[in-house]
Image 1: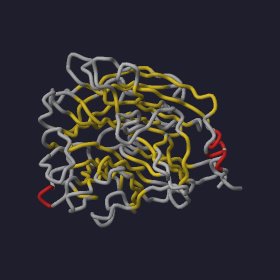
Image 2 (image 1 turned 180 degrees about the horizontal axis):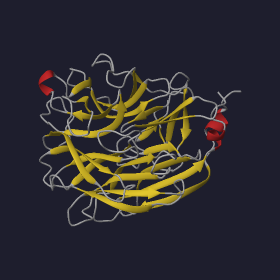
Image 3 (image 1 turned 45 degrees about the vertical axis):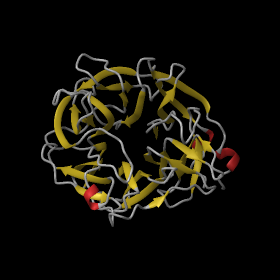
Amino acid sequence: MTFSPALEHSPPSAPNFCTVRAGRPDEIGANYTRLLVTNTAGPNGGAIFLSAEVNFDEVPEGRAFPVWRSTDDGRSWDLIARVVDSHLLIGNRYQPTLYELPVDFGGSPRGTLLLAGNAIPDDMSETHIVLYASQDQGASWQFVAEVDAGGPAIYDSAATATTTAVWEPNLYMAQGRLVCAYADERLKGHGMLQVLCHRSTADLIGWSEPVIDFGVPDLYRRPGMFVSTGELPDGTFRAVFEVVGPRTVPIHIASSSDGLHWGDVDDLGQQLVSETGTTLSGSPNIAWRVSPLGRVQLLVTARLSIEADGTPSNVALYNADGGAAAWRSVPLPIPASRDLDLENSGYSQSLTWTKQGALLQATSIVNAVGSHDIVTARVVAPWAERIDDV
């Protein structure tokens, strides 16, 4: 059976929208929404967790990472915690990511929730990749470790940049170790504006020396925002990342046989392009599941998509066979305007499957007061119902 273009571009039916947090007129807004669908057989009982960076001091301790929980498969949300900076006391500011330990690990039981993010003071003078843990289903969080630290939180992608920040942690397990991958700007002396690297741990406390995974010594291409699938059923790993330099900030995908080695450092994998020429631009994310027919399905989102004629659009890219099939564009549940050069909705958004088989999107939407709302949508899309028919 063929995958019909008409079905592929059909709009989602009866979406359940929820504004999790309304942006305020006196703040920059929210970005970097991250979803975690937990194991139904584990201590979190299949609950779904959501975090984001909220650019507003909502607690006396300053910036904190909010944590929402849904126990009805993403239909509604409760704010259950704010993860404050109890270690450096400078504020948990940017790029939170969530992870559930699939096994007992480093003295923490299976089902422990982990949150990694970037602690940055108000003067933006330093960056710290920090790790927190919760063993009570997200109600309380304790500092665990500081993975790495860098210079000021200043973004400059120019060839003459002297920035030294660390950014954008991502957590996954590989070869019995917890891996934290992140972006590092401190190798400019080697001609690399930014590299993607990782450190790993066997106990959550002691971390290996950094290993460079991707970096190009041309003072132009700047890989960033690495997100991994973790281990897939065949034992391999996939990861997506953006490549700053080209104007469209293309999204690339790469593969690893063990999650710790990604090939030649200057090999940036392949750019994601759908069979109709649609590409993705900036701040990627990836999700996967095993379909009812046993196939590994992949979904990749970005800040926006770009059609073959250069028109910005609002789709994700989907692969029905772990990356081996053709990539196809599928509509995102939450409508939003897109523009390559303007402030957008959807900066580092999330799209995944729930345990009930629905699609769940969490994103930031530009609102009427110039800030961003955090919005979710749960939907069973027409294409999702027949996603194995390829």
